[in-house]
Image (cartoon, rainbow, N blue to C red; front, side, top):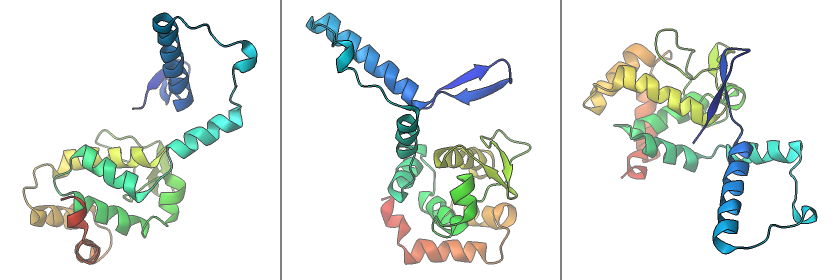
Length: 189
C-alpha cells in the first residue's frame, strides 16, 4: 500500500516513504503492547536508530524488481489475459534488461499518456518514467482498463495491441512466440 501526501507549495502529491509507514506501524504495535502487556518501555540506550542511508537501502530493497513479484502483481490486478501482459513486459524490456526499464522503471514501453489518467512522473528517453516498477504496472492497468477491457478473447486483445499499441513489426507474432515458448499460460493457471 502506498500513501501520498499533498504538498501545497508545489501543488503535487508526493509518496510518503515506506520507512515513515513502518515507523508508524511499529510505534502503534509497541504502544498497544505496552497497554495490553503492561511492560515498561526500553531505555533510550536500547533503541536503535536508522540512518538516512540505511532507510534509502530499506526502501530500495522493498521495491526491488523480480519476475515473481511482477507475476504476483499481475495476478493481483486480475488482468483478463495475464500471460499476454507478462509476455508484453518481457518483450518490451528485452527480458528486463532495457535502458527504459532499468532507468525509467517502465515495464511496458509506455509513453506518457496525454488523454487518460496515468501515473507517469514525466518523459525520459521518449518514454514515461515511474518512481518504481509497480507504478509502471499500475499505469499499464489504467491503459488496459481504458482500451482493452472490452476484449473478450485473446484474438481481440492481440488485434487491439497490433492496431493501437505496437510500434514494431511482428509485435503480436513476437508476443505469441513468447507465450508459447515460455509456456506463460501455465503460470497463471
